[in-house]
Image (tube, rainbow, N blue to C red; front, side, top):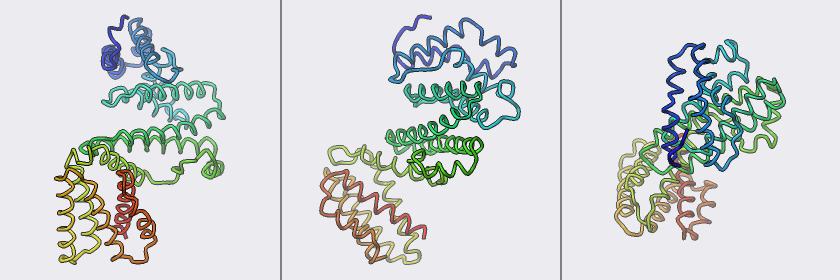
Length: 342
């Protein structure tokens, strides 16, 4: 097959034109096996893998037959694997589903996709060999890979209006991490797993945290990345960033002061004044600092002996970069979220 350009969208469309997913969806198992041997499908898949090899910074390990097996397992997992799957077979099935639908997303990234293909290839070969030691190492590697993917995804967040998409995608990634954890426990037992929690195999400390808390933490980090991205020559490019921050702060104070309507009104007026200045001025930094002092003073009022005050106070004289300002704002906002929960 001759490939007309190096454009990613073009190559994706060429592969989609093969109708692999659609054919497997509509076919019986025997028909799908015949479809896999179709020379046009084999050549088209080989051309797609060749394109990935040329464009990815990561060496691709999977061959054409293994690549098409992804679709066989995704749509005929009971026939290919088992109706009573063990931990590795269940993970293989989940991995294949992820790969089939990842290629259809709007945020297709070649290196991420190749890493996922390579992980499948290693897991697939290990499963065929029934190599438990290799499977254990693969699970550990996959767990850390998913953590890296989550962090990378959060760092790339730029659009305040796509938070629902970010949340859904993060849930998908974290759910996969949970499945890997469960597979690992089934494979090596709970005792060895608990030992792994204390070793270098778990440097990120995420095994025991609840998924919902993780999603919220990642979304908070994504918000501050978006916040910084939207500062253009110290002025705000998208006012919705500030509106979002304003609503969040007001919500904190509403829960903290409850029925003290006078106090809430005074604080809301101060917040409105600062936020209006941030949105309208050519130098938002001065008013972001004013916002920091407002939050800092309220913590003094609420909890004058709070240990966080020493941390913030030591940094108030060094608010000379946007990174430092955002860092202190993050500390204060996190503290107010805890006040709201208490």
